[in-house]
Image (cartoon, rainbow over all chains, first blue to last red; front, side):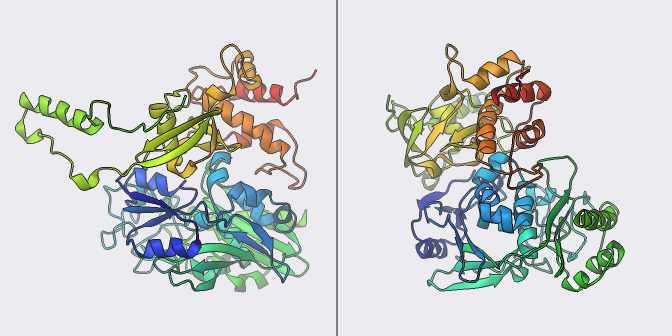
Length: 313
Length: 216
């Protein structure tokens, strides 16, 4: 790891100000992704702001029947919260399908949203990567691309967002709450939070410099069957090749997809359709595949098919 | 015992870096001059941060380069070498310890992030004369071959049974509101601990035994 200075913040706005005052600084919460990246020098922050003592570790009811999840609520605690297990089953299912027990004990809600792609070329500093080093090129296009994105890609980047939790939150129409260094707060719908690569794959979220996530708000629960189905290369502790989050009930159906794009993928228009072929065709409209990852089109359709069968069971 | 001001600076004022640099200089005298070690710029000197930890019931006060992971703190500064370094990237689980009652990968967290925290390592679970039930069960069931992953496996296993008791769900829980012991639950929850010798069947048998599920 490159040397850095370290401070413990005690207040969200103070933390945001500290970040604004140190260009290249990083907030650290669980650290499970950031420290990994610092060890291989993909991340080399000169200043670390420890936000673990900000007190943003509670899950509270909102006035309109939803839940406000503090930014620092650990993945294990969010998955195990009785209200989440009962009313937002798809979120618990998504959380426990990700990482390992040790990592979920440490990883936070905000950190999970902000985790970086696991594209092998992003991790390998000897290779070009437009996300890591803008303008250097993309070694993944034409390289080993089996696990990479098929939707919303550009000719600069085909990385996926690795989160399972975020896919369930996209399905549930969560809102991300932040504060900035001036003390102003804002709410960002999760649909607008993660950015597609376009010509700027290094810009991954809607956050401004120094802006700090304080929490995530879930709207009131959706009735119906909550399903998260994840397909991966081994039975546990692996990133998704394709995942499908679904809530299917008498009032309608919703689907969101992981492992296929730089953000949780949801096409609301497809939710009015019936049958796996029609829905999958609408969801994957405009897909651009490589020889190695074209299988994801079939895998997505069949995983969706399995979800539709499970919903009827 | 309280250890004050442990740092990279030795008692004779030599730092680890200057020792390394001196070693490199000696080597270069008989080798090619282009390999000559350059002293690090002053600005690279690490800012030491004070950290209090309670490790296996003992209070420890350390002064650390903030880059020091909890794993390196335990092994290199407190000489508790039971906790192992495998991949150093959170993928193998050999470094698993219990912090504030929860199992974590000690390689993926900085010691400075744990000021005031209670840490339990394999040395704190039991001793050779007084083994923890999970240690006894691993011995009884041959839950290892080479043993390198074992301290992490055991710390993880102890915490897994607590997690099941606390009702924490897993990927294989059918009913999210009713969490109970099963071998499948153990296999899923232990997936963050890799055993290259593949002692998995015996590891599961050991955990099943401690969970009280082996009654004939």
